[in-house]
Each structure stands twice: as structure tokens, then as C-alpha cells.
Length: 270
Ligand SMILES: C[S@@+](CC[C@H](N)C(=O)[O-])C[C@H]1O[C@@H](n2cnc3c(N)ncnc32)[C@H](O)[C@@H]1O
Image (tube, rainbow, N blue to C red; front, side):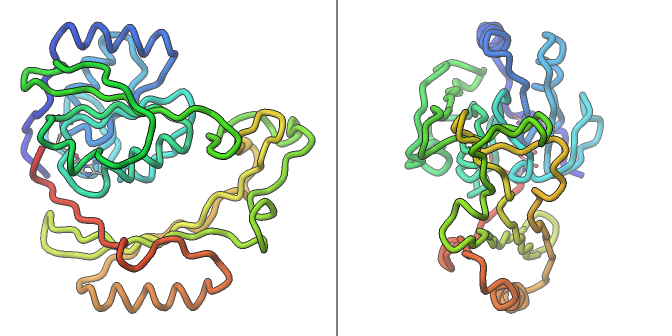
């Protein structure tokens, strides 16, 4: 359980323009790293569909918080991932990229001094929504992708019988039919020191030629790839496990290069 500290306190004018934007774009908000859920509560009170998620439980949350790693949230078009005053670590740029790739919009809310570690060098289209979002002078920056052939977002919906002609499986779309897999190590220093290794296979979606998007259907159970997280007490054990996974899935394209696999979380910060 973490203390009930609150970091981002929005200015009323920001809340108003945020509400207007979200309603105009018909977005559902995912408050990533919601803390006690105070921002979510304010948004829900404004009639915005909001889901609060956080890695850790809190005493006396202000709304229901789903306890999960935001990296694993199934983002899609029509969603706005809000990351307000995050504790710094690779999860922030990773989350922004992942959500934008999935077709969601992302609003990063943070202090200018933290841009360097949180959002610099992402290479994504963005615009400044506000330079005065909260009482500490936070900036709010929106990232979103434009749909195009080479960098298309994916959608989720419809039934498989509605699949348009020309749709082909992700597996077949890629050379040699190899399925991609990513491996990451998380060094967790929150409560004791542990290492988490996450192995994640890409979804085996359809390429919808007509709409130029990756598509998953409601009734397509076979779409899900392997997703597994294991906990280790030492880095050596974690690395030995990764070697084992790489041997087992040697026909996959393992995406995460060795030097990039260490993601650090620090539960304190803001
Ligand atoms: C500095 S606090 C800010 C909380 C809140 N947004 C605020 O402004 O008060 C950052 C929060 O991010 C959460 N967090 C860190 N990594 C996360 C992850 N991968 N997924 C979800 N939440 C995460 C932490 O547990 C913490 O509650």
C-alpha cells in the first residue's frame, strides 16, 4: 500500500478544456498511474467515461482503481491514455508508444524539467494542449498517430464473419511467417528487490486491406499470443530464464535487444 499522496492537481480552466476536447473527440479516458484516482473522480463527475489503473493499491481510493501495469492495457482507437505526473522510468515512453501504435491518443501531463526522461526522442506527432494544466505549472501534451499504410493503428470489434476480403493474418503478412515476441526485464525496487521477466507474443490480428488497419474481432479467440510474467530474486536467474525462452522460441523474431531490456521503475518520484 502506498501513501495517499496526490501529485497532479488540475486547474479548473484545464479541466473545462479537457472535458470539451474529450467529448468532441468521443474518447474514453484511461488514467494510467492514477494514484488514489482523484483525477479520475473529477473526470467521472464531469460525465467522462474514465477507467483508473495503477500498479499499486492505495488506502482510501477516490474511485475504483484497477490494479495492473498500464503497459498491458488493451489500448485502441477511441481511447485517451492520460499519464499525469508519472514516476519516471522507461514505462512512460514505452506506454506512449504502445498506446499510440494501438490507435489511442495519449496525454502526458508533467513538469517541463521531466520532459527529458519522459518524452524526448519518441519521434511521434504531438502538440501542446496546455502550458498551465495544473497548480504546479504542468504541461499537457497530446500524442496521436495518423492512420497510414505503414504505420496503421489497429481496431477491435465486429464479428469475424464481417471480415472484409483481402484481410490476412499478421503471421502471414510478415516474412517467413515468423511471429514477433518481446522480452523485457523489470527491475522492481518498490518493496524489496525483484526482477520480473515478461514474455509477450504479438497478437495474430488480421490486416484489413479495405480500412488499412490491423483488426481483431470480438469472436476471434485465436488472436491472443503468449503473455507471461515471472518473478525472480536475482538478475542472474532472470537472465537464465530469458536464455531458456529464446531457445524454446527460436523460430520467433525476438524483438528486444539485450541492451534495452532493463526497465527501471521507482515508485517514488513525480
Ligand atoms: C507520482 S505518482 C502520480 C499519481 C497521480 N497521477 C497523481 O498525479 O497524483 C505515479 C503513479 O504511477 C504508478 N505507476 C508506476 N508505474 C506504473 C505502471 N507501469 N502502470 C500503472 N501505474 C504505474 C505508481 O504506482 C504511482 O501511483
